[in-house]
Amino acid sequence: MLSNKYIKKFNEDGFLHLKNFFSEKFILEIRKYILDKYIDGTKEYYVSNSDLLSDQYLKKIILNDNLIELFKNILGENIVYFGESCWTCSHGKTNPMAYHTDNSDRDNFGKDWEVENYPIVRFAFYLQDHSRQGGGPLIGLKSHKNYIKNLYLRVLFRETLGPIMGRYKYIPYKIGDLLIWNLRTTHAGDGLKFKFSNFPISKRLNKYIPDFLISRCKEERFLINGNFASESFYLDKYINYLKTRTYQVSRWNNMTLDEDTINELAKKNVKYKDVSKNIKQDIIEKKIDFNDLHLNHKDYK
Ligand SMILES: [Fe+2]
Image (cartoon, rainbow, N blue to C red; front, side):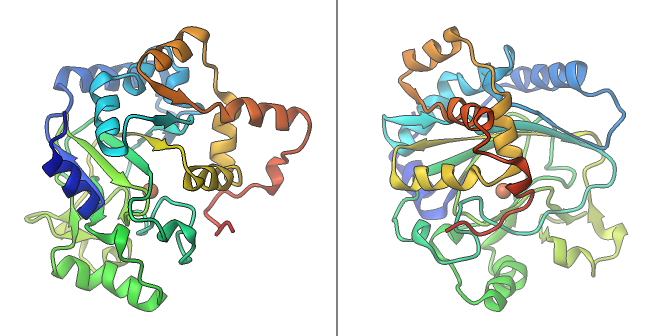
């Protein structure tokens, strides 16, 4: 049970770093499973082609009672799972991603920014330590309530003022920790930090810092993430946005849920929104053309 203090903190900061949420054993077993089943060493980057619930072993993440309870504490009793989750594995020299938000209105001050508590929340955890090496996330605290309309000022705040004021941080993630953030919260994956401090090094800053000062991830880097939401105009809008993205349409098209799994979700009072079924039908009826979808984010209105 997440105390009111933490729920308040999440709503204020747009982010929570929950230490020792999972056991180390749980995390290392997942790491071994993905390594053995999917990683053949031929590529620098791997990503699951379907959601976690479609894998008979990895579905235990989405069905984890503590995770479900956490989301109910944050979002209220009526939570929805709509088939957006995945694992990724990368190795070799990683570079940080650019700062961004995950909601549909990323680069425009659209309707997503009107609501007090945006009702879609992401969880993420890594399958290795990022407190002694880079590769963890960079997060902007309170950024979910602070959309800076001017692009120049937004970049300036994310890159320089935010870190100096302690509002933009590198998160020193340890095995077993769990991160959750509001989809409006600014963050960057594959973050870097200085070797002797946790000061964040962003994609832009990275170009000006000598490599010997930068701490990177030195091993295969596994990340698991997914979303829960509450039914709302904002969820429908977000799903409509995801229908413009190549990776997510493909993932919905590849989903294979059996009756038992859907029943398990129902038993735990998690509503399953079957977007996958509609997508598959639309593909059969040629209402969706993969050539019209976007690999990268484009504002959706
Ligand atoms: Fe993101």
